[in-house]
Image 1 (cartoon, rainbow, N blue to C red):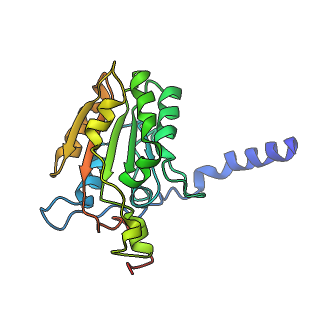
Image 2: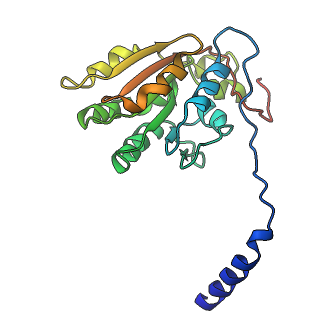
Image 3: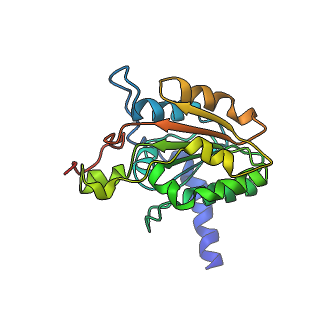
Length: 222
């Protein structure tokens, strides 16, 4: 096997300069079509605010669907777990990523439904003084499930939490820098400066309960 790999490497080195260098471009996030703040504004500003070597961690649902349209800057990494659909995965995953890469910015995007599974782990971020950038997308329930089945069904609703007071309550020693996002430009402003923050930056993003993912899907709400 070692000899075979050596031969493949030699052949590839010889001919690779003649291979086409076309870059595969994903279905990028569309521009907003109105001034009313929406998921399009939020995700476009996430895209515009990403910096080289950023690590973006996203949870299941509309967050993972939308993040598929992101184009990462040089050295960027995208962490997502779609195989098992384990909601809440992203919060402890972002914690692990930030501990492993303390000199890189970890950007976490998680919906309110997913966050209710593992929100207590933000206490660990505060305990260990991690400087991650967190966007809690409050869209009033399981929006991806509304798209799949039950557009207005009560089983896709969740309890309403006071997110900013909650995260402040998770540590008596360290307080996060908190923001409430309801208008265009706010996400980009936070992304532009959060990499220089000396504390956890936590933003609650208010979106509509029927805002479907901002990339093309092969199914329609029912």
